[in-house]
Amino acid sequence: MTSRGPPPGMGPVMVLNQKTQRQTGRQAQLSNISAARSVADIIRTTLGPRSMLKMLLDPMGSIVITNDGHCILREVDVSHPTAKSMMELSRAQDEEVGDGTTSVIILAGEVLVQAIPFLDNAHSALHPTVIVRAYHAALQEALELCERQAITVDVKDTERMKNLVQSSIGTKFSSRWNDKMVEMALQAVLTVSRQHAGTSTTGASNSYQSTEVDLKRYAKVEKIPGGEISDCIVVKGVMFQKDTVHSKMRRRIENPKILLLDTPLEYKKGESQTNVEITDEKDWNLMLQAEEEYVKNMCMEIIALKPDIVITEKGVSDLAQHYLAKANITAFRRLRKTDNNRIARATGATICSRTDEILEQDLGTKCKLFEMRKVGADWFAYLDECEDPKACSIVLRGGSKDVLNELERNLQDAMQVVRNVVYNPKLLPGGGATEMAVAMGIRRASQNYEGVGQKPFASIADAMEVIPRTLASNCGVSVIRTVTALRAKHAAAYNENPDALCNVGINGCTGELVSMEELGIWEPFTVKVQTIKTAIENACMILRIDDIVSGSKTKK
Image (cartoon, rainbow, N blue to C red):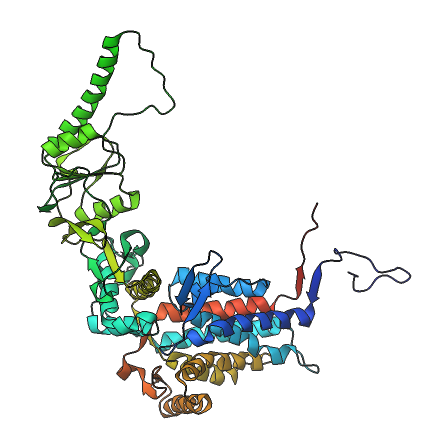
């Protein structure tokens, strides 16, 4: 590879390996935009309630059928660095707010496409820095417009919250069982959410700032193939796939006292390999007796507290099983640490490490019913009907593994939506209404933007319209007529009253223009704002790349 301009009288200087491919300047920028557009085109048809599904075969040979943007891009194997960056975008969106993964990719792709005329113009090409500056100014304007358009919602308003979750999972595979899924998502999040004591440091009435919603740790999804989707439930407590260690132990207890341990109920083994040399036969019997005495003492210390159920993360020896069964105590062994933590939170128990330090208050008494139930081919232990559990298990039933996996993805999205609203109780209208309102606002603001960046600033308005355009396209209606009519409605509403909010958007099922207030389609403010921020900031980053060097290292 030659350097750009060698000094006079000198030959070309080889800087990079000859096998290395290099793209610079406009060529690199247009190549990046093309790659981003290709990624956006992959998932464009999965937006909205009339979205299509994608079937993907992963390297292990298993099949994934989904319309979740993040899941699709996670399975697709790409080589272009910009395409990989776009996929990271969807992962960041999924981790941050849990929804809007498809929208963010489509919007980022469109923002980059809008930059092509400014970069590829032979006579008056703009420098990428000018475009980026205009894009950042447009982003600030868009965020202000969203803030103005937002409405505040009461988290306890069940009807409004149900509409909100329905607008999230109405685009998913599970939309046929909407009511069931909505109810489960709401129940799970409101069960797990916990208010921290104390007020906001600023003295403002920001009660949601002190709310903790840890879905990953305390809302466990159990997928059991078989049964019907209508059999899915949220357990008001915890369930886990274990059977009692002894067949004679009780399998149903009302108002049980629960003891949680993370210590083994068996003779303590040496940390490292231990060898004992015995010369007398009596010593052997004494050693066995000492082991038995040790286990017996542990069991007697437990029995003295009269618990009904003992659950340990480690093993339970045969001798310990005998003593516990004799005392009419039900025992479980080798429970996961995560499950033990959820049981502790649901029942009010404390996990103990030593049997000689257990106190009466360490026992969990909030559970009203313990029962062993057979679901499918396996036995499950249910700790049900807990008082204010703050942890829950979600049981999903379905015909096949693929159906269950897709149901889980849909439910996770729905729960993340509720979590976002619990944290920040603001909503924006869905169905492309917010995007169109932001587009109209940016067009008006562009008239006051001075300098050569005016056109790139206004181009963000055209990019925002990609969401209503894609919704109309996926419905099968005339895209140009629908989007033009929507634009006209928003313009007319602004001319009538500049301060009024226009909530008119596209009905994703029929393609008609309707008020989102009447249709009840709302989206969390956090998700929408995060989508716009992430898409425009990522597009700005990609536009500033002017050199791509790619090539394999030489093998030694």
